[in-house]
Length: 457
Image (cartoon, rainbow, N blue to C red; front, top):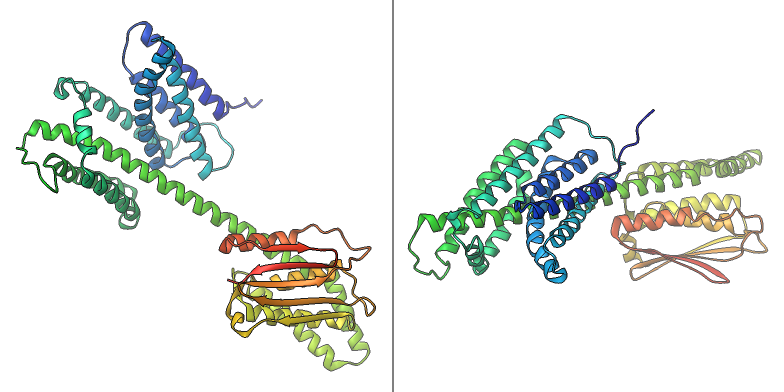
């Protein structure tokens, strides 16, 4: 029997409870060291990342940002709750529980945005080993910086004097931000292999931070006449390096979010286009359409209307040829779409010799605009499908364009035995426009008329 797997939300809650227990015990035994909490946080990120199949770069980026956020909230959040509750033990427990839940759900949200499949059990693989190594390296990095900042080398003030010097230099901050943006955007283009990207990132960061540190230390661009002191310069360098790493990680995460959104939109667009193409094919190759077309062709042959039968076959072939030709195109010129619609209308008028009228009113300059392929054919097909067409009750379809809109309308005279409308055709056209251009279509229905307005692109 397969054992049930613990869900990721349950993992987050369990780690939050473990954080609370460690925070309480450390205060009871006066063991003021946040390394165990950092180990728990990184372990939670590791488990979520492996189960969701995240890339090594993203795991490292999330881990860097999360331990930085946990450090800041752990200090200032604990002070806030201690003043609010007046309890030195409960304050860090509440703070670390909140921070752990936030970090866990943040990691889970990023994992779901990129890789929305269901969770799986942890599997040991080469990728998992790389993730474990990167998380372990970040843990060592955290221990090193914590030990360095609490050492006598940074004196009693800690990192705050150097941190405030960096914040006071606008040129250095702007250069840090812009330089990291440029490098993050160009890194993948310049270095295709992962190892080269990591080495290039390390070299760029160390060299770039050296220049930033010099700008802050000597007060550039104005200058402050400070004499060079290796001790103070190194202290400033370590602080600027830490801030730059965090900025780099946050920009990398922002790029990841943008790429994820773009890929998700692209995949959604492909899915909707596939549904649209399927619906077009189903509308045209369904048994009713073929049956009616063959009946018309048989009638023309029986009546020895060879010229009309030949013209009908050519138009039918042209209809399918256009559909196959435009199957992979997102947009087509309105002039081509209108020509295809006329061929389709001619086929219908062989079936409805009387009672089916189509009026076209499109200014010539607008024929160079673009529309979604086969949208006119689908709208005409819908009008025929749901309305009475007879000499006594003619169906009038009007195709007109003005400004940035193409309007297809028909008088409303619903058939008593018409199939219930599923709205699939209109839904697919609407989604095609949203995916392609972010432009909606407008559907209006009154007691006497049905009207659809399409954007002209």
